[in-house]
Length: 333
Image 1 (tube, rainbow, N blue to C red):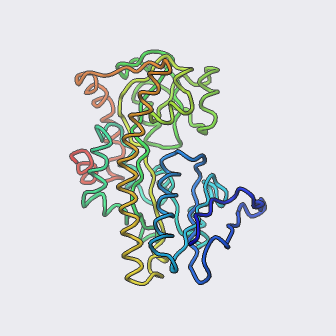
Image 2: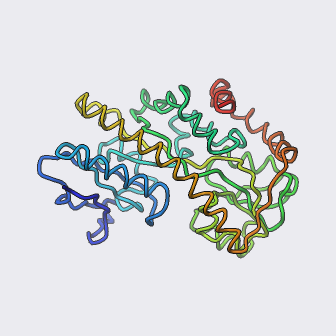
Image 3: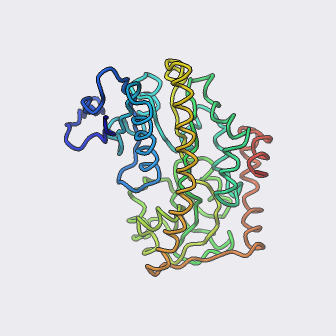
């Protein structure tokens, strides 16, 4: 029985091609190698755990047919190259952020809309709905990408160098955001300034005052210790952080009907299990923030509604691109 290949701990990187080579001896002779590339490192991140669990199940239950090798932490392809690699067939599985697909389809922007989901349960209900499942195929016809599932990382919360209870409290502040048009519009709706920067730079930027605040999940806030350099965190649950577990239609078509059915069944079961585990991990890290001395502000229903109303213009700005029916389906899940 082969083991998951977590390349590369002892294999040299080829920087000229930005690629890494798995230890093919981890797979049995005659098995088809399936490369799974993602950009997340460590051992406990939800994406890392889900990727490894998926590989372990495929490698056990489809032994002799498929062998999944996981390449974490950009050891095979980085953010800028992985989608191209999937198109070329150099990799078969990815799990990028849902915010990365704006150039392929605007539909996934529904997940970025502020306050469209009250909590992760609602987000999970939407992903399991007919509209959410149809959305997995939003890129099938134009580029041949197919979603296998949505991997949750958690809801996002605002922190700042001052207490945030109402959106107006953020006026004039600078917030770090991802490179997302929706995220930038959201910060501007608060009267603040969005500053796109790499995740690795956020702690230092908060510490030195380059930015005044940020938005993230409990797990990211705790593990990166953002609470140490912020006045407090506000439990806004304003946005979802999630990834698209994906492959190509060419790869699925290359499998026999029976193998494809089994492969998709494993993908779905791992996705559902992973998303339930994330809920528990997020709750644990919220408690860890409080134990470490961090401060968390909670909102009354009336205060939260003010945030929701403040963000409605963001919905309208992207409504035509995303689709009113899709927005309504997500909001009412």
